[in-house]
Length: 551
Image 1: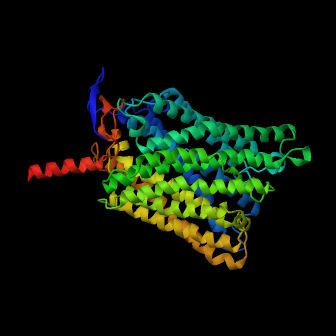
Image 2: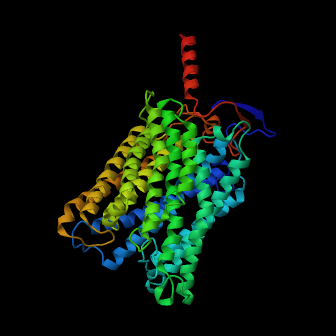
């Protein structure tokens, strides 16, 4: 994307950047710089990731033997609740929007900051307050309801820390709403001159759609948790049938939020892949408009398919048929994206840099997750597979194989821009391959386990399932090594990494038109956009002319 520049009233010192703009802890905790807030989120969600990962490791160790014995059944229930709550609400949902989104949205649209910088900081404090409440509930004794908090157990019979855990999610939800609102206003009002809607990077389209979902869906979760708390505290009969309530109402409300939340987790990763594929194949993105419209379509369809989670919960069979059809339809815009990415790769000058390896991993794992979702969208098949390990495998292929691969791909792509440093490329490639191999060894056997009938959420199982469970636990250990490697070499790069330069990937996009790391106000001169996005074809022609002139 070529740009012109306009002088700003005040220019910046050449070497000044957001990292050296005050080193005290106070300057970071009170910052309104979107880039610093993105890094605060990065540190926070990384800590939560390893807390949730520790719970998953304990569960996999318990499942090495059919009769377990490492932890009690009660503790196992608390472990999978802890794993689900921490990973969903304190890692997967905030990961790309709050970290990469915060850092990149103003840079990619040519703005100095987000529309509401103070609200941006408040959203991080809300996230931290919510996370602290959830961690307190875990330390104080844990919660055994499962991450879905199904009533009437959660509202009547479960242990007393349910409210603290729910309060943590409730508080963090307000931070999500604030973040979504901030991005919507920023994208609408603060784009650089010439940056029309259909010149926006596709990452911005996904962040915009994700923000709309956050603003529209999160209040439903807040209302649902509030009603659960009212029933628990005051005995109001909302969900408990013994009090005249309806437990199916809770499921409707919960999944009306939680299925769009799946797209909160996955859409930003799609945006990341839409940036990586053209950059490392040196081609303009194929079908830009189709990908943009498909992004919005996924956001719309996400609000229409919540009922496919309730095929076996006494929901009307006619409602089930409608939700089944809609669930098949939502796969179409996702398939459009995969097709367009593949078409972009066709005859491209592909280089296998670390971010591209994560992009390939995303496409493969997300495709498997999407195709297996069609099995669960079919009414008759879902009756057999519901509440089995097939569901766990499908969910993780989408969420971990998709969302986490996208996050890591984006983190490696923009790390030179964030820090001004390069990481060890061969170690990064080793980590990407290790994560891909470990992930498949962990979760692919679970498809077979689910088809064979092994139920999820049980600490014991029939002996004939042991071999596949041992494979799954072995894969989890490899996956853990893969996740620890980036933590090591990225931290190493902060001190010892080679200087990156402004644009080490020779990528298009406004974020690559400023220094690495960027100055406090992002641009010394206000950018003006004059060309279409992902104009790698023109870039290649320009480089060819330069080479010929030198020859």
